[in-house]
Each structure stands twice: as structure tokens, then as C-alpha cells.
Image (cartoon, rainbow over all chains, first blue to last red; front, top):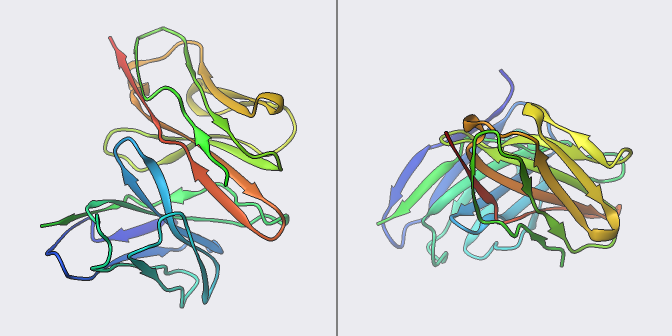
Amino acid sequence: DGGITQSPKYLFRKEGQNVTLSCEQNLNHDAMYWYRQDPGQGLRLIYYSQIVNDFQKGDIAEGYSVSREKKESFPLTVTSAQKNPTAFYLCASSTIGLAGNTGELFFGEGSRLTVL
Amino acid sequence: AQSVSQHNHHVILSEAASLELGCNYSYGGTVNLFWYVQYPGQHLQLLLKYFSGDPLVKGIKGFEAEFIKSKFSFNLRKPSVQWSDTAEYFCAVNTYTGTASKLTFGTGTRLQVTL
């Protein structure tokens, strides 16, 4: 089935450690996104990429890093510089319209990171 | 920068009541508008979207939304809610200029439907 796969589903880390969350899609979408979901704050954009080897900062990129070496993959690293890393992280992908507009986003099931 | 406001944070309705969830955005250019729903324990999924044409759009499960450009609004409605509509609802606005595209979400509205 086509879709977006995020792993791991749950992750615990100690303070000071970097962790990488995986996101893979087989929808042949050009654009991929990472959002952070916190209660009462909705979804906030961390990073996004509209083409391989290129990505842009979102609204809350500090303390995070990404790479886009393949169209299907967009891993997110939560670094030790991120002050409040405990959150639910969502990966999404979409097509890009002829006018440059973003199509419907398809979401993965999310990764819940807890910093101990 | 564009922003999306959902004024209702938590709504409690009885089954068969009518629903209207507000969504306002702050961008004067071209927009695409979306409502997403997150049922308990499930991933986010698209409820409906507006790109162009008829400003009244219909989505899945009897939901509809009306784009009112003059009011910068895209409110979600359903004439008669069911217990299974209990979920969190997110409005999202895509703004694009031909060179850049950005999707911004509102903070969400938690809908609780009681029997």
C-alpha cells in the first residue's frame, strides 16, 4: 500500500543525546514536511523540502536538522540543542501544483519522543 | 507572516446537534484551504479542501465548509453530528506566490460528542 512510514513509533532518550526519526514515503511526492504537535498548539512546521537535496526551515527549526538525499526519505534529527524536545512528531508529504501550491498532505502515524 | 485562528478550542455537543467550527486566516493573497481531522489514536486525514470554484465545498462524512473571501474565513459545518465525529479538527491554509508555498495550521478544535 502507498503511504508514509515513520519510525520508531515511540522513542526515549536522555538529555544531551541526538536522535533521528525516520520518514519514508512511496507516494512519489516531491514535497515532504516535518511537523511537531503539542497539546493546544496545533501543528508547527519544523522543516520542509520540495526537491531532493534542498530543504527550508519552518517556523521552529532551531535544534533540529534534516536531510533529503533521496526523494522517498526525509529523516529528522532532534539535537541536544532543542530545549523542549518531548513531543509528537509528524511527517507528511504532498504533490506540488503547477502554480507552486501545495496539494493535500498525507501524514504518517507519528513518532512520540520522550526525553528523560 | 500568515496565521490561522481557530477560536473554539473545545466544543461539546450532543448527538444530532449542528456543528460550526470557525477558522480565520490572515493572508490577502491566493490561498488553498483545508480541514483535517484526527480521530483518537489515528493519524491526521483530510476532511475537505478548497482550491477554487464553488466556495461551498463538501467533504467526507457529511461535512462541508464555506470559503468567504471577504471575511478571510473557512468555517466547517455539519447539520447533525454523530458520536463518531468525536475528534480533533485542524484548519490549514496554504499560501503561495509562485516561488514559495507554505502550509500553516491552526491550533485545533477538540470536538466531543455525547450520546
